[in-house]
Length: 367
Image (cartoon, rainbow, N blue to C red; front, side):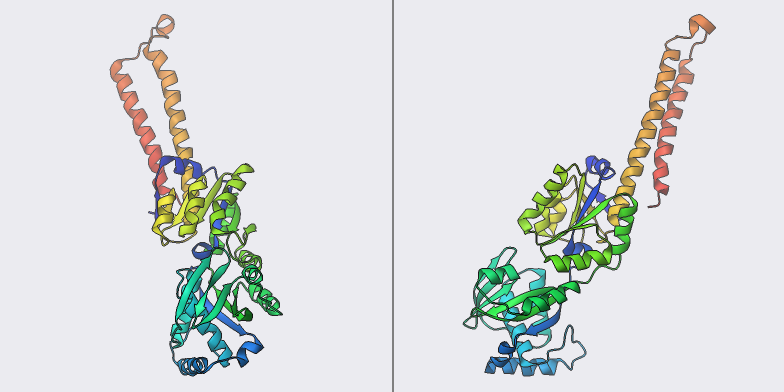
């Protein structure tokens, strides 16, 4: 009824014992459908536009007048060239941010340039040859590793990050070309769902590979307690284990392939039903609605179910503690009381009815 699929009884029982919930950012707190929001070419890059880029700029200028336009309008030719090179390189990637950049270029009518030698470096960025030019696209650490001088771009990037946008640097032939900023809108119900988790006494932590400033900006908007930023995909499970090592009972919520090890490591793994099959297979609980409200719903259902089971066990225990000695004749020497087997059978049946009736009260649970 709540769109929650629980794969085993242990997960149902453990959900009520959670002390910390770890949320993946992309696709869990946010919608998972990022879009290009800002293009910041360097001055020198503006002046270096080639004939092909000028043509791309004309094409994009025409596309700006269409009603189907999405994202920032392309002004100078440098913006068209910046987006064109980034999209041409990212065409070799399956990352959600890459798909957003490619879609932005195609929406503006830009024809992608030939790509060769594509390579993705986990947690850093991508590189390859685009139309014969060595292009690097990634975070500041990646640019530093490649010996690219960023100048004043980090200052611009910091301002973008404070607005919950993810700035990505582009370099061409070893020189900084600019920033492509991408933003993933926060799900409308994320803030309310996290408030419900707090009401249940849970600490909420967000984990992401995004930069610290962007992650902090998102966390502030939805009321998250702590942020684990710039975490490599392969290190998410280790971060969950670290929390467990400090005595926390951890629930992990994610939707991507990279979340699968962390979902398996957590005491209870929650997979967003709109995510990947690998994540769903690794999790203990699947939230079919794709909403974070499924997490507090599942926890409330867990606590109510375990509480109901304990009530039933207590009732059955008390009944047997009192009934079995009487049926055995303990009171007969004193008051001559014996328990007729027919009455004992009827009482046992009534005990079962009582337990089933109490259990059925869960059908009226409102989370």
